Image (tube, rainbow, N blue to C red):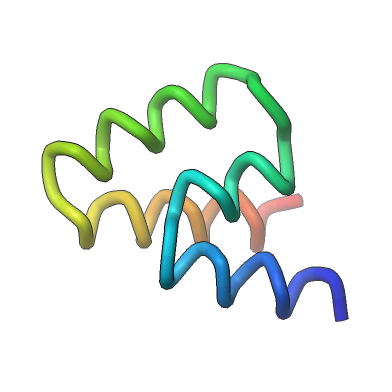
Length: 53
């Protein structure tokens, strides 16, 4: 159930989904950068981070 909520956040607001998974680590800041460069790369990265762990 927790991963489903994180995936939903990852689609709506990718940095929030990553934050819920890893906190303020490097992946969070990378996701903010990717989201600023393009919304789709931020979503892909967020879902990958959540699915990997």
